[in-house]
Length: 431
Ligand SMILES: [Zn+2]
Image 1: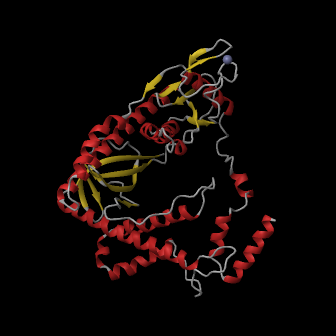
Image 2: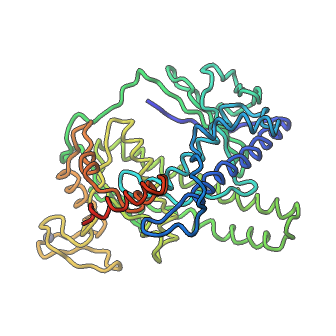
Image 3: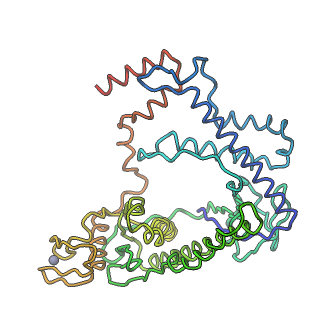
């Protein structure tokens, strides 16, 4: 079992200076590695069906990858001795981050989606570094021993559970100070899996909404706190103050800090709310059915501010984790028609967004969200849960043809003759 605990650090001035220097150096190195990747791409790319007028005709250079960039660290240390002060694992992790960001951009994941283009990080935008290994006995009272930084004071507000050992430590600079996130692992704790199928008793259906945060299938609702909406006034004030400050001045930097702190406070409150609601649900039932919403799409609509303020996506990920730790499961069901159909007779009862009451010809009278929650529960029970260990999509993934952009990338990495060959092959495949 793997868990993460976060603590607030109380570093002294020397340690703060050191960590800030590390972050700046790491930022530069991150940008350098990323630049190398883009550079290679720019000089070796070629469209599937076009003469490479845009690229050089020199032979293909070696493509930078994680290992080559990691090997270059030696060179970097020789050229810029200040990098020798940084712990080697932290530096390697910086290269790893470039590798991850770039491979997510280039290679589609299991569902065929790719991430956005990684960006160069401006001053102050590189805010965390990771020790990929840390000693199990690094904590001594209210101090934590970090390699090359020394003993740093921290607020040990929560004991590390017995049996768990520290695996990695990530130190991050947030708006209100430095934090450390410890990843803890206990191999003796087995992964809990639900030993039964969802049924009427052990399942709960929830309907996420913007009027109530959620309504469950027995009609209980959780009011929406609207943290951001409540904080907007103060935020506007702070931002107005910020806008009157001269660029580059110390006062402006302070005002920026105040705005950032305020944002963090709002985020923290929301997170706390999500955790407490998820806890309540997990105690109620083993299986939790919810809608598989297109949150990204909704966040682009007119409801964007309310949708983002509710933070459904982060709530669902918290809920999934909590359910898994309790040996339960979150079942995401098809959201189509959950608000339009009757939970009793399945007849279609058309409603607009403004209609908050569901009244059906079969005699069912209840609030719209309550009706949806019952339907979601029914769908979750019908869907059941797949046999643990089997991956439903594994087979369909293998038989899928490579998408065109993937092939284009492959083509880009081969020599000229092979390129032509590949293109013909692809034409044959497509027919
Ligand atoms: Zn009905």
